[in-house]
Length: 324
Image (cartoon, rainbow, N blue to C red):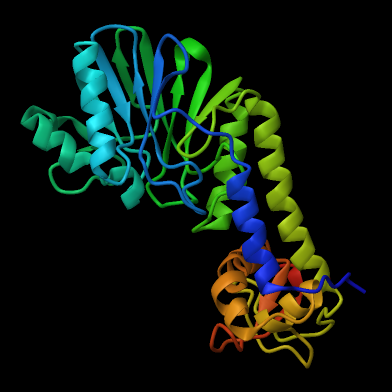
């Protein structure tokens, strides 16, 4: 029987607040290396950690900007101060993805210098922006950045390898502290494997401090996601459907009894959890895990409303292709 951990909502929020309080402070502007400067977005919070990181990359007068915060006045003031104090120019503005806390400051940069409007780059670009494709290279004096398409946290998510440092700008896929929110777990897992295969030594996350051991951080992230998937699969395996009318290509059908709803899966793992917490906190990430398991032909489900749908483990015989 799976171990059931009592869930206390107040303890959960206290935990999040405690995690936030333990985050190391980061300077508003910090020269991390001789080619990477970090500017804080001024938007700390439970989801943003110390805030969104903007990076100015290069060693000469011309620099590349990665991410633009959410557009708070203190952020543009810091960027303009840095640019003016060091007489810098901005050659490219690269956005790791479309989320507002990363793309929100673009308008402020354009207001500061209208010429920058034509220098904004993003995968799946918005109107007036330039596109970024996998493998595309952006270069300036002292810095060569290679774009790596890594969807999962967002459909347009890009990371950037800094060739001169063998470092990776990880965006929101890998954070300096804790774990990221995921939009598509299957795509995210593939992206993590691809990021790990780059064998970068250090990382510059979009939230949190510099990652000093990128290899260890990637292994931590992959292990974490594997554990979440295995935890749910083990729970459903105890409610395995031995015989079912499951259609294997769709991995959907009506089981002969058994199966578990999202709420029942949560209860089996964590114990009694308020319904609203199940729907708002647990359902999003559990649904991602379940769809990943379905794509891997390890679980099936009955059609129906998301919160009432029954999920069940599939036997080895059930996941074999039908013979002619």
